[in-house]
Amino acid sequence: MYSACSGMGAFLNGGRVKTLNPGADLESSLIATGFAYSDRLDEGLKKVLEESEDVMRFGSAALDICHVVAGNLGAFYECGLKPWDIAAGMLMVQEQGGSVSDISGNPIDIFSKD
Image (tube, rainbow, N blue to C red):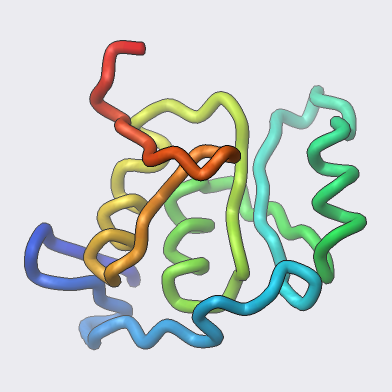
């Protein structure tokens, strides 16, 4: 079970998360994504498939982000997410000393009204 508390750290099964393979290159990374069953394979996903080791789809953005924090996945991306989809995962990342960004590298503010 993943858990985090602001200012107290990120945890996995009650112990501190130990990030594996921090900064691994994209070519050797397993990437997670999410999309609706009705969506077709888009150009972004095709590019990720070409540039990475493989892509996984668990169905929970927050869980995917936790797996990135633990080093089980190299990255996670998905379009059209809502704040409630990623808030818990973002806290895990921040408590582990990381940051969450959009595809251009800009910080994500889930509380903005844009």
